Length: 571
Image (tube, rainbow, N blue to C red; front, side, top):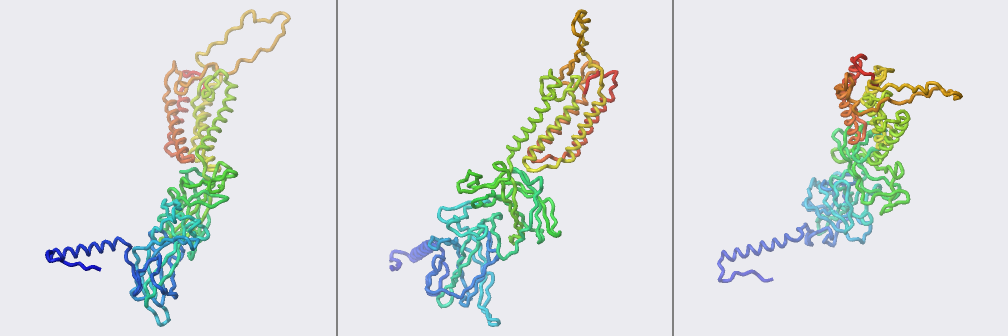
C-alpha cells in the first residue's frame, strides 16, 4: 500500500490539509456502507445473514415479552437472553425477517438501529444461575416478500406478505410471523446466536391482532339490538357486550368489520366508523357496555360471491337474505393500557342497501295510494286530480284537516317501511310521532263535528223543475220508481280551499295558513331525519307544542264562527 508523502514543494500546512481531506473521504466511504456491528474477538463483523464465526453458543435461552405472542410495528418487545457465555459488556445485534414456510426460500433480515439494554444480571452462585441480558427492541417495518403484498384495513401499509410464502398466526391467520434473531459476541471468539418469533401487526391496525397466547382473553357475549342489527353503510348498529372480567375504565375499544364467507378464506378486518358508548357498567356482574357503531364501507380486494356466482379467489359470501342482504363479521376488541386484549368477541350484522329500501318504500307508498284512489274515484268520479280526490269532502271542498291526517299517514307509513327494510326488524314508533298522529286525528274529528250536515254550499244551483210533459206518464207506460239522485259533490274542489274561507265572499284564513305551513315544516323535518339517520326520529317537544297550538287555533276558529255568517262548506 502506497503511503501519502508531502513533496518538497508543499508547505507543512498544505500537507496537513491534504491528510485531513483524505481521512474524511475514507470515513465517508465507510459510512456509505452498512454500519459496523460488533464482532467476536478476532473475527469479522456480525450481521444477521451470517454469524461470522465458526463457533456458536448452544446453551443460550431466550424469552420474549409480551407473552401474548404479537406486537405492533413501532412498539417495543422485551427479549431476555440467558447464557453462561454472556459477556459483561455485551453488544447485541437484533434483526427481523419473515418466517418462511419453505426453508429454501430467500429470507431477508432488517436490522434494528436502536437496541436498549434494560437490565443485565451477572452470574449467580446461590442459587446457581447464568448471567442474563434484557433488551428492549422496537418492531421495524419489515416489508413484503418479493412482489407479493396485501394491504391491511387499518393503515393500508403493504406489510402483509403472501400467505403462501410466509407463516401466519396458527388459529386465525390474522398476522404474519417474524423471526427475531439476536447475535451477541461471546467469550473466547464465540457468538450467542438465538432466534425467537413474534407475530407482527401493522401500526394502528387494532382490528387484525391475532388471538393472544398467555393472556386470558374473555370472549364474552354480544347481544345485538333487535331494531339495530341490520344497517346500511353509514348507519349505526347497536349491541351490548358482556364480560366476566371487568372492562378497564381506561381501555381502548375497537369494532371491526369484514365480509362473512361460507366458503373460502376471510379477508382482513376494516375498522368501524365512530363508536358511541350508550351505557357503561364496569362493576356489574357481568361487566356490560352498550355500544352504537357506525357501519364502515368494507374494503375487500376480492368481494365474495354467492351461490353459483363465485369471486376471483373462489369465496362464497354469507347472506341474511339471499342476494339482497350480505352479512359481515363484527369483531369487538377491548384493550388495556398495555395493548393486551381483555375482550375479544365476534358477532355478525346484515349490511343493507339504501337503494333497495327506497324502492320498497316507494312501492308501498304507490300501492297504498293506488288502493285509496280506487275508492275515491268511485265516490267522486268528476274529480280529476288524484291528490285532491283523497281530501275531498262530500260537499265538494278540499279539507285541510283531511289533508293533514292523510299526509301524516303516508309519511309515517313510508318511513316505517324504509327503516324496517334497513334495520331488518320491526321498529319503535316514537312517542312524538304517535302524538302527531293523535293531534291530526283529533283535529279531523272536531272539524267534522262542527261541519253542517244538511245545507247545500253557497252558490249551488237549484235543481231544474221537471218538464210538464214528463209530469205524468204516458198511457200504458210502466210506472217506475224515481231514480236515485246523483252522488258526489255539487262543486269541484280546488287547492285554494286549504287556505281560503267563504265569509261574505272569499278571503284568506290565517288559521288555515298557519296550520298548513307548520304541518309541512314538521313533515319535512321527519322525512329528512329518516333519510339521513335511517330511523324515525323522536319529535322535539317544541314541534309538538307548535303543532298542538296550530291545530287548536284552527279548530277554535271553526267553533268561533257562527252558522249565520259562515257558509255551509264541509271541512
